[in-house]
Length: 98
Image 1 (cartoon, one colour):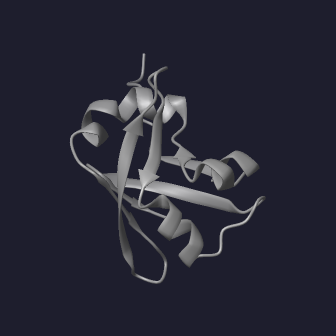
Image 2 (cartoon, rainbow, N blue to C red):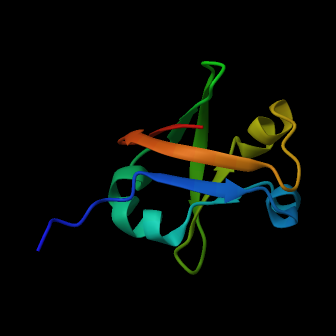
């Protein structure tokens, strides 16, 4: 049996909940595979314009992980609206390109 391949990438649509709650949920499959690595520190998003955005994670009551601390500023800076699509590439440890 070949080794299991870790999920490195994911995408998220901006929804009304994302806008209203000022946070973005990390997909459950990605969370299961990388939880220990990403919970130790804050997350950094490296964006195509070479800006680095430090963001904080919040764990909800059901164990879901959310990008929340710093997300409102990120969302506002890039004028994210309902229907926008973000692709995340896990670069290792706590860094993502977006």
